[in-house]
Length: 314
Image (cartoon, rainbow, N blue to C red; front, side, top):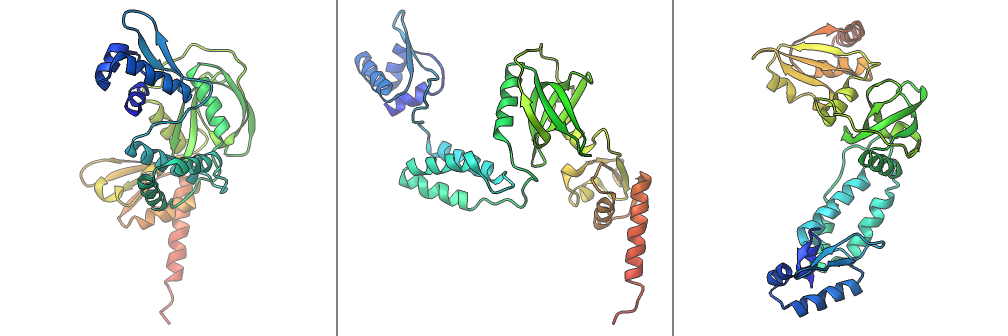
């Protein structure tokens, strides 16, 4: 029965003869085991015809799942990471699901998954936890090509009502982003999910568009790094790109080789003063190509360090 259930959970429709052959049982035994699965709550649909066929379909209630050892460990690891994404300590649904799963695991697996879960930590958390309702509604709307409306708060604190065609949800830099077509601006836009409120799905649909040529992930990454309202800092390092890339956070910007001896770094930070400090910590000669704010903060930092070291040691 467990092997039968494992085959049915692939989602395909199985001819009765194929199932019986795979299991090495008679047609009568197959029908008996299928009836037992139905009694346990698994919605197995049958189709008439030459030999008949069977398929496990979605039911109104969720029956017990059959997981292999590796699948159970992978599920626990995924739930643990989901719980770690909550900034306020309210791990909610992820922790509840994790506890339920651990209660029904056999002893050999319970020890294994607890060991794996205990070894997982995260160095930092996002500023706000993930709203599962927002994630679910946007995902459903994107899949069914339905318009959405929501209030959006920009990074400067300005609120606006947005009418959007949702397409993809992207996890980047410990934050979730929505890639959508802004109907009022007639252009592609990205929205941080933690800045969305009052989300509604009116029920109207749209004809899907071609995604940006760079793809959803690249478009969201570029938008997150270089928002429309932010200026870019451009720095030229007098060192190979391999040397500099090992000392900069990749998600903070883009680093491209100019030649085998120099590279250029482009970023749009939240703080020019922070960027001035980071650039100095790379430890290789560099030239700031712009903007003026970054040059000014770098000069202030240099003066501050010079004054701090101008006195003889005590």
